[in-house]
Length: 361
Ligand code: ADP
Ligand code: MG
Image 1 (cartoon, rainbow, N blue to C red):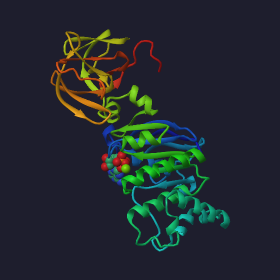
Image 2 (image 1 turned 30 degrees about the vertical axis):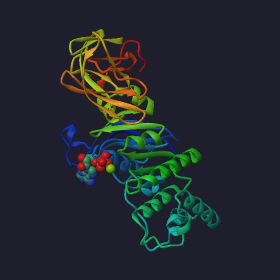
Image 3 (image 1 turned 180 degrees about the vertical axis):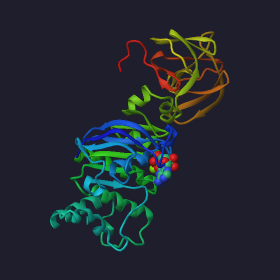
Image 4 (image 1 turned 90 degrees about the vertical axis):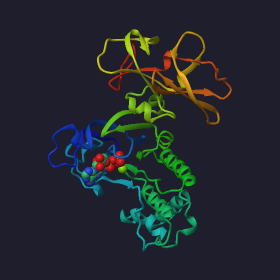
């Protein structure tokens, strides 16, 4: 297991990149802590696989270095990096049995046959394939083959890191949950450094200690699920994580007061004067519908019942917004305004979160 350092890393698929837009992965400095489970989360095309393939050595970066435990591996081939990688689609040897497929990485390293037999049995149990160990991989469903790929990725205990690139894409929804739980317990038992790529926030938030959110080739925030929920560093994080995502309201800001749609909104903190497009980000969980003359004018356009709570869709000065109301809290029928809990307000200038006076880094 190893700490993985990305030093000044960037990648362009173009031979002569000129501007920032030419980079699929924009400049990045980061340490992946030894033994942590990370999720790499972002929409399709944002650069997740590019980053993962640079770490595994399938791709040589156009700029910067990769270090494993402070040793430069930038030019080392994949085999020399001692990692396991599982891809989106199955990679199995069709003519081999399931057992031989699973044993392959261990035999390749000259492991003891007795240990191999035990370990293969263990992994087969984890992926639910004990019954078919002696079958050839040929003819198995894509789903089953992907489970073999996963098993093969997990079979070695002595790897520097385990990398997963959307490994559950072809797995049926029921089994997805099961396999994700297995991966988590594998991490718990062996403490591998794990990087798990996904575009699914639920998958990321349930799997990882830390979530790395990417947007348009850039890492916009690295944080615990709670940090991403409470303090989204970028409006994209607020919007992408949460269901529904964070509301954004155009605002003017002076000291510890904002104005939204002309109405004063207390912020709870003082903000230094700032140029650019200023917005308040408020998650639907922190929006309350209120009666009376105080608050930001809002029109209820729809009420959606989603089980334990309701989602109230709103029109606020021509912009759409949402509020979440618990099922046992009545929705005031004549509510024409909304109010925000100051603890739930984040302030953004040109999409990046501003730090208020006295707030820790
Ligand atoms: P993700 O895994 O997040 O979906 P990728 O890392 O695959 O994103 O892609 C990031 C960007 O790089 C995309 O715009 C994609 O079209 C581009 N890209 C990916 N692979 C190549 C390649 N081999 N050649 C040229 N462009 C590529
Ligand atoms: Mg990808």
